[in-house]
Image (cartoon, rainbow, N blue to C red; front, side, top):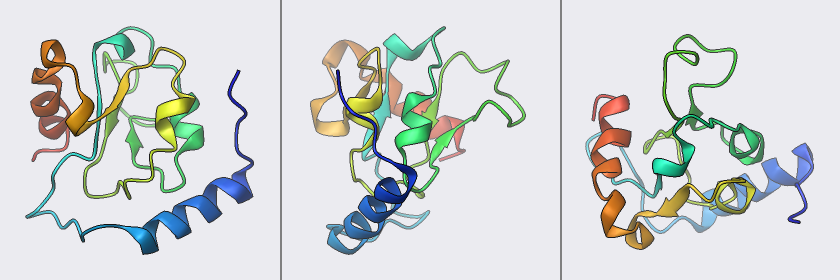
Length: 117
């Protein structure tokens, strides 16, 4: 079983990843670093939300639209490409864009559309 990072360690990881980031992502250049795919539908386990050092996974339990959403989504502008969410997901629903199985390729558009991109 994977260990969860403490809040302090998670935020430190986010800071380190921010400075190691390969390229700046702006709203105009918002490639999807990570995609949440089909296994999240109906589950919406928030372990990934807790693992994320920059709070880029939405909707959170306390946000509008959580009950109506069928899955969680990663904001491509807020995401710092650290990957902390991937091992935290209990249903293995989070993939780097390059590793997304072809059968779930349409989730790239679904994730981007959720944020109006």
